[in-house]
Image 1: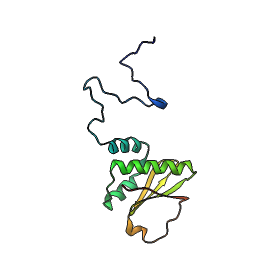
Image 2: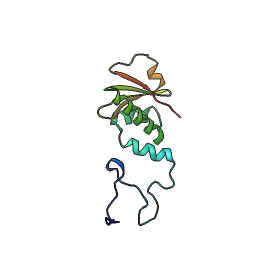
Image 3: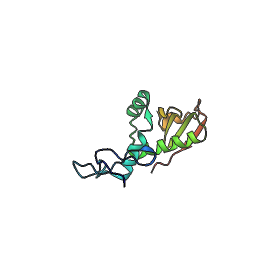
Image 4: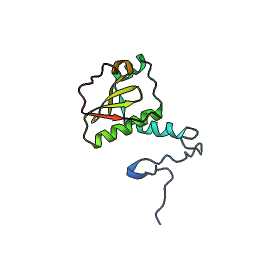
Length: 131
């Protein structure tokens, strides 16, 4: 029977480190956090926001929860599966232009900016649930 060295991290599926309880605290690093927050934070790691997008979100006062960021990451993955390169992700009254291969949100558009009705330079549009 192989020996288990407790000092080495155990890899989960596809080499993802196991986030089991830490020896020092006996608790998971995510203990006490809402499931949607944990999921959103993990998925967000795979989706980046450009400085321009961060500035637009701040100036247009568009808050995003970790769960919403997670849904954006999921939508980006769906767009990628279908071969999209530049996608418009629509979540409620907000639109996000995403460079799909780079997994980067390029900019954010609020309802007033989308009222112009014409968005160019995209090859896909994805409606994202805003629950």
